[in-house]
Length: 294
Image (cartoon, rainbow, N blue to C red; front, side, top):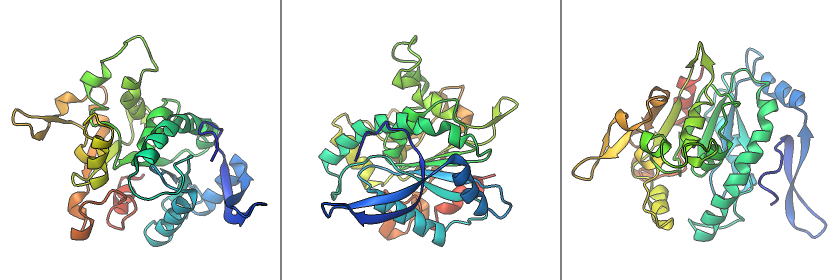
């Protein structure tokens, strides 16, 4: 619990303890940027750490996110290439299912969490090579943290619970054109976070999708706006005359169209996983991050 916009910091030795009332809480040691960098560098075979910052989705408890990252690190990630670093933000209290209460409270919290994430800029700048994964509503945190001052080699938007047209030129050009902070510009700002060489991005914003994602297909109805989600549709899509989705890069803003690439994941999922939403660390998905990393 706590303010979502509170300054972020690095932690280590996170463990569960009981407070004076017997309530289970997490306790950790704070790290300076230099200490955190040393730990990450040690995990790299060449001594030059390449962190992969991982923002979780909605209604995820810190214990769960930490456990997920730990298991993924041990089971599927090549630590010599990069090291997954969990990024935690105040998400809904413990609960089950896709409850409206947790969904809407987390949507509200994610705005402040994005602003809080910005406080890590100085720390993140100490890593010349780094990438970012945002899962589900974590992509909403990314929207509000988006700033050209942040730089990542690659950004992976997995099962993104944001509107599908966030990169579309019609959406970006809508609203008050004089307001540089308007939400319509957030898609552009996400792309501006890519590390560049000679004015051109080195990497890309990869949109990982699953058209059968049950959580995202429910999400559009929970919001009552029936707006399809990016993680279910992908970028560069519009409906054709028959109402079916068709890829058309002309709908994407021309300044960022080459920075965005869809990665379809449904074909990589087995029969029992076809409607999965939290597939970001499945063994068959992790190679996507490894192959794109440089």
